[in-house]
Length: 143
Image 1 (cartoon, one colour):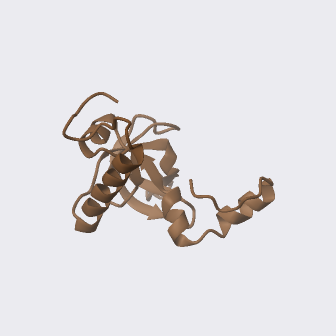
Image 2 (cartoon, rainbow, N blue to C red):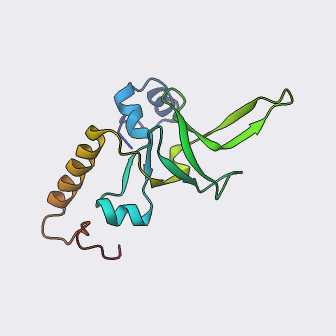
């Protein structure tokens, strides 16, 4: 999570989150990857995008798998097509879910910029590890 304020006071923490700029909110929308994707891509987490397939891990929709239909930067919530309920009028409403409560099981890689960003993150992670062993997609070992 990005550091938005140095204060530990709850009122200042709340204010910092409420007034966070969009580039900081994007980091708040990160979700962990599944173990298979972690081994395949060599990274652990990435911001959620529309089109990603996620598995919900907590709440009423626990165990539900579906595609992300909307990402709400203002509320820091995502909407999954399989997590919905019907209003008495018959209209379907999507339930807002915090991205930390899901695991990304399939990435939408239609955007080339995202693919290059994944490579950049993986290389930075390997460089940061220095002498320690980091599992790369080529090794495919257990983490």
